[in-house]
Length: 394
Image (cartoon, rainbow, N blue to C red; front, side, top):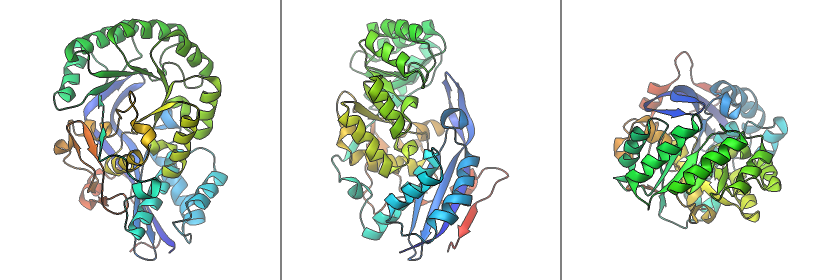
């Protein structure tokens, strides 16, 4: 089997539920790229690269499109056996450092092909299945304390047992918001606060200590991603577990976090790690260092949701209390202002795993288990851009 063609599809989404975060508002963005890899045996695989923009990852729709269309597809992928995943990753890494989100889309498509060729779901290629459904956390953005409490209840009422909220602009508002949320949901709901790198060390310590009065379970990325010394200081000064997110986008960055003892847990996203192949390495490295791992999302659509489901169900380290509530699906739910899959009306794929009652299902079909909905893909195609085809596509 050989790869004969690659298609790159740039997409733009406009979220119905706008998210306020410390670094800005997430609404209409040209963030997403779908990659389709085709083989000479008629099998094809899908991958999704949701970049979140250069301010977050250093990658954009333009960089992902150019890198795959001009370099990876013609020079590495076409003519190669899609089962040669290690070789393909080696060659991609040799060509360029970083760009792990673009590499993720390629990796996901390769595993999709392998699963289809063997007639098994992708999770069987990654270690098997340890669970039938994955517990999720409800996610909200920033706002007035009473509004955040009300938005929290939207998710709790339909079955979510955990919440992730944002902070990082105003210390007083952050604390008041957690106070209001805790009052609204009671003592049993787990609360994670993502500060998105927004505080200096002293402010982070002060705010986290104040939040601890209201039973915050986890704090994510309190200071700048490069300030590992500062994050280690915060970790030692508070009792709430501190997580690395933007500080550990790659395996090498995670190793720096481990050496500096800067975090208690890793907020892991297979969608930005380089894909399944590298993602397993990252999770195993965290495990070897005694770090717990929480699964999260790049805010993509159904391809990413399927990839998250396959990776999680094959990775038991991701399901351990108190870190068992994961952020998968929060992007696609916000896109449609939904609480479960019933509200997702225009996904780019058919066959995506189901979100219901605060849980994510595990696909059972071969490969990722999803196929492009061509009508919806065309609807989201970025204005002024077109699908790029390299090689032979039938």
